Length: 289
Image 1 (tube, one colour):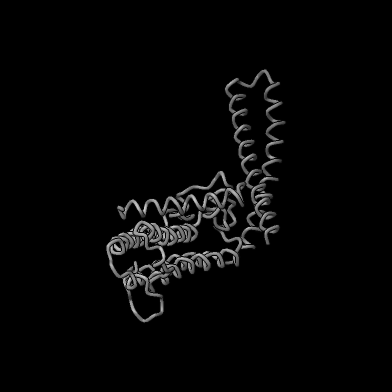
Image 2 (tube, rainbow, N blue to C red; image 1 turned 120 degrees about the vertical axis):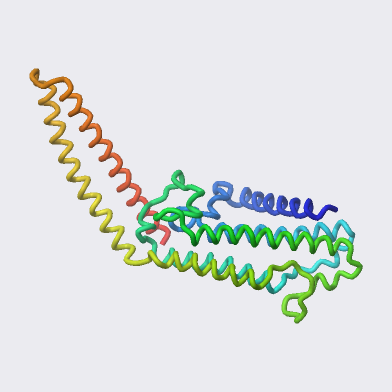
């Protein structure tokens, strides 16, 4: 059986299995929820964890398919190379660390801005409030490269177990003291991945300072500005009524006053929506906590 097709089939089976489990147990939720962080944005660390979950499970499914095609399913043993364990540790360690940072600082300058489901963008994976984020960008690139390298090694591994007379060297348990011939990623690449993860986590730690105070101050400033703006609109409305009734005011002046009033009202609507979203976010965070 073609090993590349085997890998593709295994990936399809895993994704289908995930979908079936979600449909039976949580059909009202979306797969996108796996990727949403505490801030409401798409999370790169969650994406990385999800990618490796699918890849590693698909690797084992591909092995099962290959052995079943040879009629040697009894030889199957669930084993991983040491490097694969380190790779999973980096991925899930990053996810847990980032989640801890987000939970400890529920609102920084970044988190104080509420992100509703309709406002989520895939660009959140590689951007921050300052624009394109190099730490996120390089981590995404290294994740893609690592997954490709690992799957390429899986393809070689499947080719070997398709033809090997003795399958024992291909199923040596982790910690046995022997390297075996399991799919792996070079340790130097893992070190590079670790540096990438460190840069990403370090970047997450930087903005976590006086978060709650910032959000409260920002909300208070918005409400104060809204109150002032509302008084200004009332004054403009009274002024506009007098202008409309005056026969001596030129039509152009009346039009300008009408346009200015419209601009102020749109600004007030925007501020009201932002205040409402921040309060809603605070309520949801309180209910979850």
